[in-house]
Image 1 (cartoon, rainbow, N blue to C red):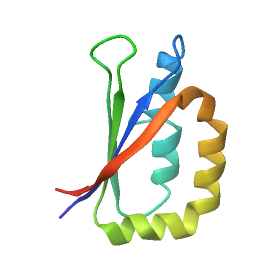
Image 2 (tube, rainbow, N blue to C red):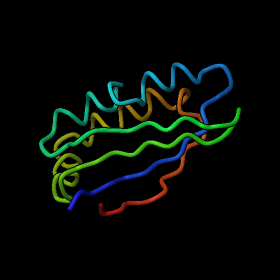
Image 3 (cartoon, rainbow, N blue to C red):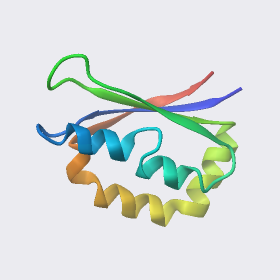
Length: 99
């Protein structure tokens, strides 16, 4: 069963492409996640209307793999989150799911 984590974002006007580059399947977050075992990929869903919410869907082999990533890369995660805060705009964790 795959562990899935979903976030929603509303990037600032004019920074949407920068956001897409950082948060997409080959972006800065994916590069960090790939350093851990059990990461299966990220999907970025663009808002259908201007100013709408974007979604990221991060897939892991299991919740244990995600938790191991958090333990091993927690400092790098927090650092990248702070660095990209202005690009992310509004953000909210939607939830964790099993696929």
